Amino acid sequence: MKSDFRIVVLLSLASLTSVLMPGACVAAQQPAPFRLTLQDAIQKALEANLNVLEAGTRVDEAEGTRERRLSAALLPRLNAQTYANVQNRNLRAFGISVPGLPIPNVVGPFSNYDFRIYAQQNIVDLESYRGLKASERAVDAGKMDERDARDLIVRVIAELYLNAQSAAARVDAAQSRVTDSSALDKLAKDKHDAGTATGVDVLRAQVQLANDRQALLVAQNQLKQSLLSLARNLGMSPATPLELAEPLNYRALSQPEIETIAPAALLARADYLSLASQRQALVEQQRANRARSYPKLSINGNFGEIGRSIGGVASTGLLQGQIDFTVFDRDRNGEAQELASRLKRVDDQIADLRRGIDEDLREALLNLDSAAEQVSVAKEGQDLAQRELELAQDRFQSGTTNNVEVVTAQDELARAEENHILAVSSHVDAKFALARAMGDTEKNILEFMGKP
Image (cartoon, rainbow, N blue to C red; front, top):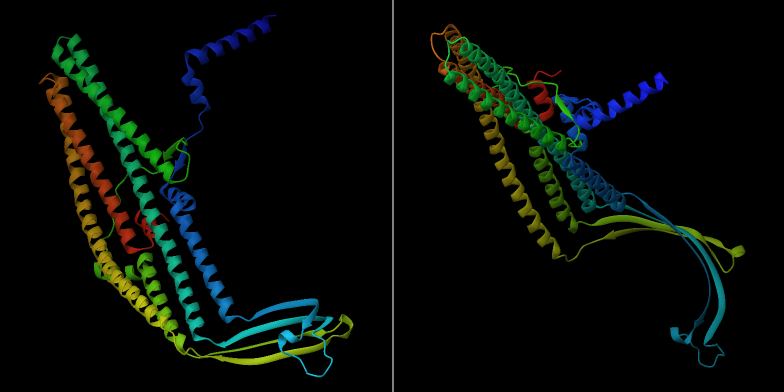
């Protein structure tokens, strides 16, 4: 009886706890946060991002087009055909009649059977050959477009991860300010109780603590929003709890020379290589256009069995060579004009992108150098603001002055911390921009961030 009573009491307490403290039960059921590194975020995005998946299907489509051109024009074609029929013929309809002879107008019925294999092979067809080469260059362009889509997604995800890191750094800074304000509030109350501080000092400390708590709530909400956006772009459910495994920090980067990285960027940028492949495809199409007037040589033939009955069939066949000439083809001129216009357009795009790549590299290097100097200055300002706060706290605790100096120093420290977060974020973002401008974005980003 006592054990039954104890069980009933425990169940009642559990039910009461779930009613009075529902948050405790929910918290116990929540899964552990998913610790996410920058490299993990990049890999997840590349596996789930829609633009990357679509670019992959376009490559497969271009491969299929190349395969169709190869099989349709350059590979041998082989097919079989068989039939059996029963028919009669109207000889007069075919103009067959002999006056004076008793030839019937309609003959039959008679039957015949035929089984035959047909084969055809193009020997010389430069138009189809150049068309195949153009489709191969189109496949190369599609692959470069896929790489460019991956590079773009890597850049976007890295920026979203950086935004979350900055938001987390602001939460830490806001939490530190709340801790300092709580200590100031307690000190003001203790000094007021001891008669060495006024009620204004207590009120001023309480106002500062309230402001810092509000700032902490704002920072925490911004962090949650940045994690929601990051999860969405990783193809994860926004309800998935995330935790950043890498805090925001400064890592110096030896600045490369523009004369070294500019030529290398042209060989690594997927968007530039895609345009180059598109240009090669257009050149091949121009060659195919000119080849439309060239003769084409092919061979074809058939072999099979034919007869009046299945038991009486005999083998027959045919082998012939064929040369085709295009005597008049006005359409070729219009196609040539179209291709020339497309080629000029691609050339203009290549020249513009070349200038754009050079601009991107120089801008990233300028931002990288400026951000490194800003980090140094911001760090110095943060250290000075921290020292100022410590001196103001000592002066207030010793009774030399009121806590106005402490509150002012706290505000100065908050400003200095925000400047440092902005400077470090700008430096990291400049690294990401340089990695994107150089091409092979994922490899460069991980290298710049010190990843193996």
